[in-house]
Length: 479
Image (cartoon, rainbow, N blue to C red; front, top):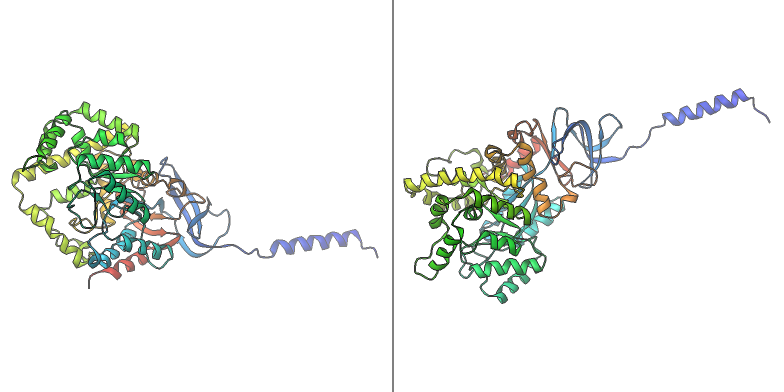
């Protein structure tokens, strides 16, 4: 039977129209953020009116808004908002023993509520708890940041901090490193309360041979150059960099070494005034060039220095965030507070001068190419350094010191990821990257203080809108 051509044409047109109208099943994403401006922390470029789709903890789509339709379990309105990678705090502490484990755990919510999605634990005595938290957070049973940890610190005999691995001989250092590798820590933290200069340098050398990153404080009986050339990956705080900026570093180091054989050995704080008086711009330039050449990073921790310097004058009893710090941790604040109140006027004046000098080093190191990592030093015993909020204050101080807002953001994102060797999977808003993000109501490149104006946090691919973050904080508030 033959059909007229006109009938066949009409039938084909009807079939095509029907197919076009048939609804296409959309993939259901976990989170979709629409009409948002993306902030590239590598280049500083802003890309407006974008949509970001997230599934299984990863970013899977980034493209102009309104190009396609999206279905999601969680929608986040990005209109008028700015999306940045989650912030990294590269120096925090979880410590205080088992009696403070639950109190430390509460701080995880504070980090997240302030846009900090990754932290680096710089040594303590709660390593088993940290591994338990990490497992619970990865399973979606606990809200908090990703944690890199050094596990216990390495120090000398009769170390100041409980839980430290005490070393003096090469054999003891090897056993300590064996222990840390069995724990599967992310790096090695060295502390300077009792460790000898020889053991310090040997720890760096042996750790480097095993492919382990090393960071830490540094005994004043060695020079920073010695440590850098052994392979030190980062120096915590600025006391040790500052000593290397002295035109008399060798003489001061020899003085400290010789004093160790006497009943009154010289420590860091006894020598700092002489370091300050012998500061040399030429020595500073040589030091920063050496650090840049070896890619030795620095964690300035400016905010804790400022806070502790101002402790004698400032009353923190009315701090709004104090209500979210467990009373057991608040009790650990008393030691530093009591010490600050006993300081002489001369000591207070010197500390203020020293902090101002430290600020002046920041733009010089940045210009020289020294990797700068943003860290707060928050945790028990560090008075009024609030988890999360203190990292925000650190960024404000980095900008006050002379960095651009973009450079400060880089110190709290890409620099930390590079240091920990994970930059290829995180801190970029692109398909395949970890979905750890912060949605801001203002442009942080115009004003770094906009990092405080958080509309939502995405952690491990789950969105926490502002209301949810408020509820999260309310859950840990002291009753």
